[in-house]
Length: 213
Length: 254
Image 1 (tube, each protein chain N blue to C red):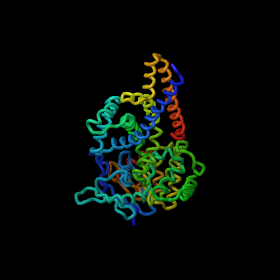
Image 2 (tube, chains in turn purple, yellow):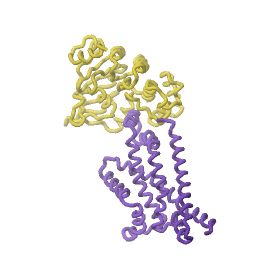
Image 3 (cartoon, each protein chain N blue to C red):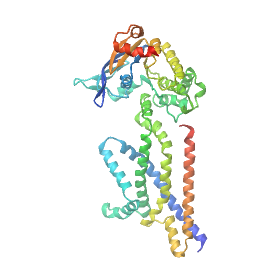
Image 4 (cartoon, rainbow over the protein chains, first blue to last red):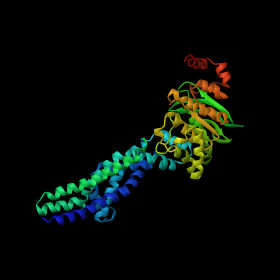
């Protein structure tokens, strides 16, 4: 087994893993916030479809969603996404549902008096949300968010079911061709390093927000 | 002309009528104290006037503008959004539990609304905020966060925050009830100071001595109705109703 080739290929595949990770976050966080607001509105025409969406995303396997978006869109909608965009779309839609529920919990946890104080001072609803509520939500949801971020790093490995070559796919190919377990151990270290970095970012964020209670 | 008139206000929560036809008036520069047992509807009245609740029926006008009136069908008809928002800028409210914004410094708690609601520049807003903090004896706390302040200090910041919007009438919803007894004095002193400056105020309070000294009118509410009202000498000195007498006697005992 040529270790330098193994390592360089694993590093290359890690870039794909990181790409899926960052693209998913970039789109699913704002989408999740939007879904949370839709979930909390009393307008039934918005609320009901949003609830159905959350149920679908959380109630079916992420792997099934990946397969559906890659293989199922062509016969149903006539659209064939490439492997990587299909994977990213599935991750974004899936994670937005989980993020939405975290945002919803965080928003509900802000005392009503905060909104009332803002209203009496003349803030519009939009100002109240973005200036008063949301900044406080961020502090409160850091712990559940860190769980999701860490899970996402590991979930990226599911993308291989639609042929995306990411870290775990490369690794298992090496394991079968070289008949060695060592690539698995290396992959484990790679995931650990990534999640140690994620954990570190969250610790720093929690520290940053510790200036108030 | 009165700054605030509320006439025949009705409000129910889930079928239970909390306000059963309340009428009050406040003249410019006047101080109205609202007293009464818990659950009498005092806070609800304040929340209706400050638009935190909507009334079911009745008329409210502030600074000559109609917030709500009773329509022909006997139900409340609110003015359009623009008018309601304009009226909201005439009133300030100080909450029982302060409701300061914990993620903002003391200074930013006070400047945020003048900057982003009234469109003042940062410099203008900060200059007037510092003046208010000086008045509240909190100049050294401008950069502190609310969680580092005592309850009394937090309440003074929230008074400064309300004053920064230059309201024509300032409402206090039991401003000392969440404070330790030794801290109530500093808040009452601030309110006394504002009264001396002829600030128009409506104060829901359990501090009877304070109501007697500072208010020029006292309203006693119980079970959603006004049982007695008048100048403090009359309500406290020459109490008419048995209900009021019974309520006040409990305070005299202490």
